[in-house]
Length: 108
Image (cartoon, rainbow, N blue to C red; front, side):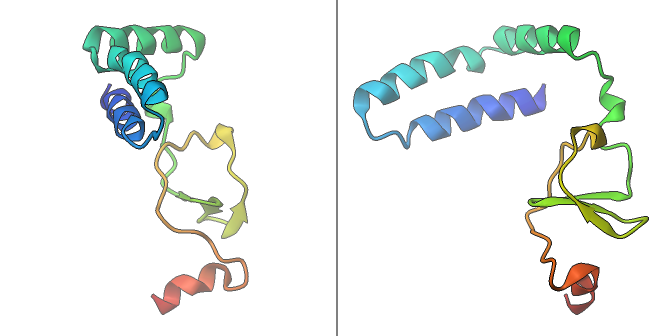
């Protein structure tokens, strides 16, 4: 529920950056629905019926490190493209630099 609320807030922040007044007004009118808790609950319930994955399955593997440009598998030290099967929801604000490889962390 908290992530859904955060999305609702981010949509409004984004709306304030829209230059065209009419487009901004229309966008805000649509986003207002997301500010209502009941609307968010309905959206989440609908999504759960389509994708019945328990929340405990997300971010379950502590050996997967999610970067902006892929996933570092800490067991094998492989850096691979993002994979939905990893079920990662958290991303670090850093990018893996292939030329440095995994040894770059030693310099930090």
